[in-house]
Image (cartoon, rainbow, N blue to C red; front, side):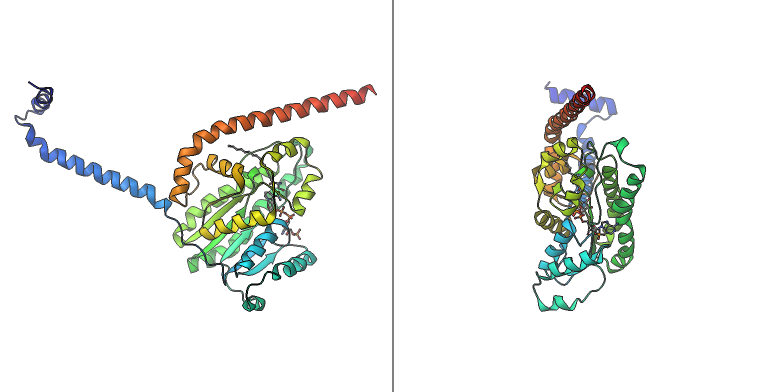
Length: 337
Ligand SMILES: NC(=O)C1=CN([C@@H]2O[C@H](COP(=O)(O)OP(=O)(O)OC[C@H]3O[C@@H](n4cnc5c(N)ncnc54)[C@H](OP(=O)(O)O)[C@@H]3O)[C@@H](O)[C@H]2O)C=CC1
Ligand SMILES: CCCCCCCCCCCCCCCC(=O)[C@@H](N)CO
């Protein structure tokens, strides 16, 4: 007796059936059910991966908060170059008028001079500031200020446009976070939380408004050469400087190009440079996916990037330790004098 006959006779004995082929219809049913389950699972996996339709910037109305300087101004220029109508939002009127002049140099058609604005097609929440310092050195009211400007300053404009976007069943909302909104670093105990908060807001909001064909983008730029960075650098701890140098300094135009491209495509995540790419793959968590390649890349690279990240973390720890020892030595030297 072959082992196959042995197995089938065991099953038939067990089921009190004298011929195994009486089981055939059940086996077929099982196979069909398995196929259906696999198909449904696949559909569920694929459905969030379907890419949104790109937004046409030509003739669109783009509102940029923090549009009078730095990254915001470059985003405004980039959108204007692609034919959009722009509204700049900020506090200082003189700076706004100067920025308006600079943006208008890049007109691509006569129509743009007429400033024909309508409902907002894309909102760019870029107004913000950075304050760095050791936890105990930063005044408590600065923690509040950063949450107010960086976080709530993105909530209010979004509230102002969301109802109309939902009615029109179209739109883009962008939040400018930071690499410091993906990783907590020495000196950013007040700044990082305000940028992490944007990610929580963006994920929740995206789930609510996706059926209305509105797409959210969170941008995580590295250090970028702007008036804001120059201001921040005046009081930045040495540790923060050394750690941030890891991912280099970018130009605002270069950052803006990438951010605008991602927002137009409806990508949830927008990162700059190789470190930015690794950080985003590593911290993707349960954030929305917007293309099959993005999902596959995350699946394949995560373990590798975590391995690389351990080396980075080790080097950050050693920077912090070295700076502490140096400070203590110079303090001791001062006392001796
Ligand atoms: N530069 C960098 O290294 C990085 C910056 N970022 C983020 O990008 C954004 C822009 O930064 P950056 O270009 O460097 O900054 P800038 O300081 O160069 O520009 C900031 C802009 O925001 C406006 N703004 C500031 N505070 C307020 C407020 N309370 N209400 C309304 N508008 C305000 C400013 O105009 P006004 O003062 O007239 O109101 C200005 O237009 C920020 O959110 C920053 O955190 C992220 C990663 C890196
Ligand atoms: C695989 C893992 C890779 C890990 C790479 C880690 C790189 C960390 C660098 C963080 C730089 C933070 C810049 C903050 C910029 C900012 O928001 C302020 N300058 C605003 O003014």
